[in-house]
Length: 149
Image (cartoon, rainbow, N blue to C red; front, side):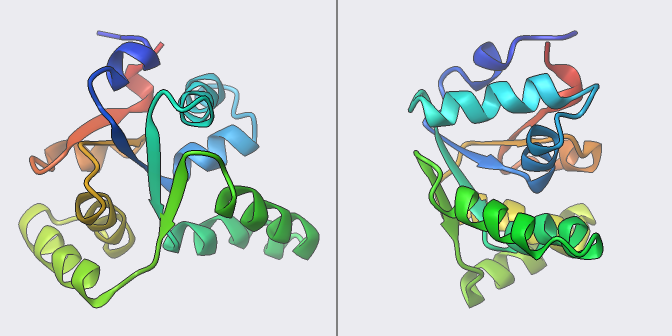
């Protein structure tokens, strides 16, 4: 069952944004770009507050750096770091310990566990991703882009 992005985020004040959402948005992904852009637009408009991990900066820089585009990596870092109503949270010891518990309980990959732990520590009540492995996480409502219209 598909629902709209606006409806999926209704009732949430603070939402964790997975790196994939930014990647789909920046890359104007054919299948998921529209949904990702709608999420980003709702954050920009202040309809919901977004939060992410500084780990996303690493993940977002890889492709441009592989292509020898330091300028693009720098631009993405600047944009995400200064995006309205969006906060990048540093990776702390507390987040890492929470991530370890999430990884043990839900068998998440380490980067995913760090992202989810960041959202939990920052008070997010929902996480927007396109990673179906997150569906099993009971600690936060998981919203998968593939389920949105």
